[in-house]
Image (tube, rainbow, N blue to C red; front, side, top):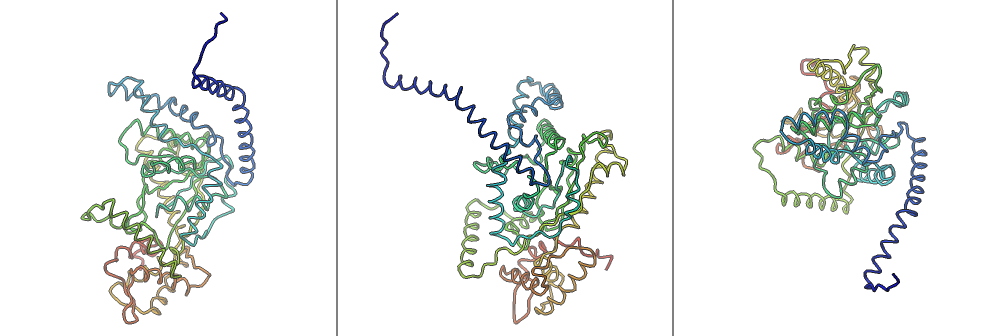
Amino acid sequence: MHGTIDLPLWAFALLIGLALVATLDRMLIPSVRWFFRRRVNRAIDRLNQKLTIKLQPFKLTARKVLIDRLVFDAKVLEAVEVEAERNGVPREVMLDRVRSYAREIVPSFNAYIYFRLGYWLARRFAQLLYRVRLGVTDAASLSNIDPKATVVFVMNHRSNMDYVLVAFLAAERTALSYAVGEWARIWPLQTLIRSMGAYFVRRNSGDALYRRVLERYIQMATENGVTQAVYPEGGLSCDGKLRPPKLGFLGYMLKEFDPKRSRDIVFVPVGINYDRIVEDRSLVRSLDPESAPRSLGFALRTTCTFVCRNLRQMLQSRWYRFGYACVNFGEPLSLGEYARLQGFDFAQLERDDFFTAVEKISSVLMERIEEAIPALPVALVASILAANENTPLSELEIKAKTFALIQELTERGGFVYVPRHDQDYAITVGLRSLILRRIVLEEEGLLRANPADRAILLFYANSITHLLPAPEDT
């Protein structure tokens, strides 16, 4: 009973270490967690006082809790039973699949990272590449949105820069939750994206169980007032024109909507345009079925050449960034009010009638997005040169035709962004950008479109074709 036990020094050190860890876990760490949690909660309270659209409790809920809620959601469990019976697989195996899907989808929003690190990075990066401008915003309508409503920003998808640009410009109003494709699921980018409140989506997945889990997450977020940003087109425009809307995400949101009992959903249309899109050549090239796939080495060489060229232009004081990037916020649309006026009750509609109703509201939203898209200097000049691609023009002729185009667009209610309120300067800036990229060639004092880059010229001209009169109207 009173004998002596000899222990090696390493075993004694290990025991002391374990004792310290146990002490910290039981006594000190809970106090430290409480201290930091209290400071974070105070910071969030101060932040909510400044934001137009508040952070909802659902967005601040611990990720593990949200995953459990999603996995054990009644409708998800119902889908698990169906899939297990259909495939002859044990229910536990299907539940493991659901849990992996939930972990893949559910974000881990961190307010500090979003509003401090994320906002700082987005602002610096956007302003490094572009002269960022907020064109038109219906401040009165945005301020009058019901504080209890779920706000969904619906926008056209011009570039992967859209995520950065809109998050930066909307940061003083709210925190946005995006759906991000699988391209971003690489370490450490995926960790940063999740902490910014974005969730990952498998595009065009044919897995019924996965689609059910994704659907329920979007519905849970919408029902709990999470502010979201959605691209109805479902992907980037490859020819510069607006793509037809896809009904998936909007269908998920509207499927459980009851105008009498549900939290209202308010859609805010957003129009985005750029003088230059970094990935424009890749987008246009994707339309050519005969184009050979590019290797990773080619992509790396092209990227290095692009970066070196722009650095050289900086050193030569010939770098003008990528021109202007402009965002307009249009007139909000209340789903509750729309449903009452149209006599829709989405939750009670049969499948075919439901998708007809979703198509109808999608068309309304796309029209409002079209109206919000700004006409920028490059798009204006590109439109003139594309319409006269076989006719060399002097700079004076281009300016005269562009002046007339600006006037026509303005009369038709389109938004034309004129930097410095100087139309001559705007046209000069747009023309300079196209000449520097050799999309426009100058020969003997006359300017004409470069035939080799006709598709690129049309890509920028197409961004405002919807603002122009249809051929039968002219």
